[in-house]
Length: 329
Image (cartoon, rainbow, N blue to C red):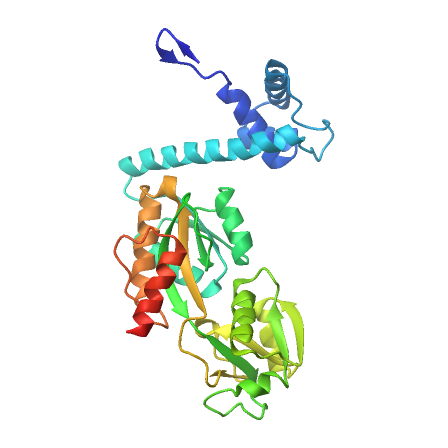
């Protein structure tokens, strides 16, 4: 509301901070420790918020606290509010200090998470970095929920709330035991997939989506598919001879027990493209600028060469067309 031409917040920032901390911790006592305030003070601030706006935010006061429907909606809003507050604080501190203090990376690719971490630390030796690994869906959700500052994901959906920097384009390889009959071949025959047990990731994995799309494109159905969830589990299964797996070429680490080969007679278009994704509202912070610059540097090491425009804050569909144009050239 406005009083004498001055904008006044109708909601107490302190009360929102109290609610957000309690909702984040699912506990008043833990939230009090987090904010370094007395537990009764925090409880009073939460009650004042509920009473003033005549809304029930938690189902009861017994831990673990559970949000009501209204509480869940408010929590989604306060996540954005306090993320923006953190951005402002980091922006102001960046202006006074030459380097950011913390960075939270989410990634569906351990390889590229490590590469970006390495280059960030080379730029900012005092930077405290936290990396969390998950599939593309989990990683994008963490970014949307402001649990990470930047996400490394494969083939993300286009969204105007995000900015994108193309990181790599890659193809799928077949992983097999060194005892496999085709382990020493230059290519893995397509028809052999129909006779093989294929070890695959979970359905929400972008690698799994790329494998399913490739199998549909070449009209091949494996004899059997076994879901083993993680890359590490699949590699171990391959090494033990349980079946064959499929990985992008940059995620085929040396292993004396495993041989890798591309599929025979498959078009050379990329099967997977990876991006660094950040919230558009944070694009001007020093940390995000550095992460995006590093992504551009690493793109030169992409298994499939692609030159992208300097301003690559585009939806992935636009970038996919760009890659297709480069491949056709």
